[in-house]
Image (tube, rainbow over all chains, first blue to last red; front, side, top):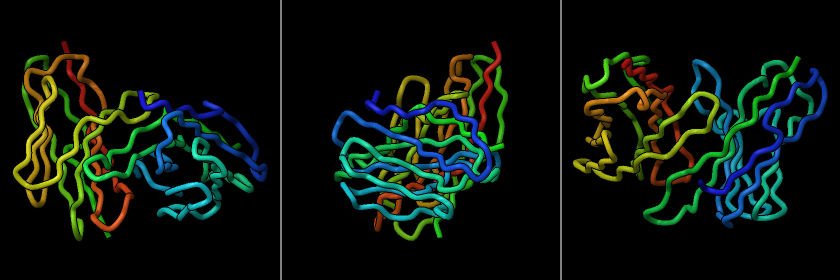
Length: 114
Length: 110
């Protein structure tokens, strides 16, 4: 257990509404990631953070923004949700240290955009 | 661009029937290759990291091996509780991102 929680765990929202997903970690890891998982595509990186207020884009970042104002929290925002953003979203953390590059995942948030 | 291809997409085994899952990869410089297990409705669970060709790691009935172009996850005498989707991912030396394959869905029948 890497001490990662995600909230909410399930959410149904309407097209055009803003949505914020939260990832919280208890172990002070430097790196945090947001992925989405879809059938036929596997896990794809949306955004990641390498420190407080330090973030960068992943391969599917369009339509998403992130913020990290505290080490323990990484927020993913869909400014105006679309049906194509229906997915399962996973947060992950990594120490990012030599010999310890593995990522540990949270339980996921299932988002449905109607 | 990094690429990871896993095969087969799905595999059905009888309990005790050993087999292997394949992960082929293309990466400019490999920092590490990672194996994960994912159960339905849950997040991926870390299993192994392999860093260099020739390296092997074991955990219970699982053994992961690495060559310069592919990795194998060998499952010896599997049990029904080994049923899950197994994911492979690679990380380049230049960054912290992981590139995932689509996974192999393993079903072990009693």
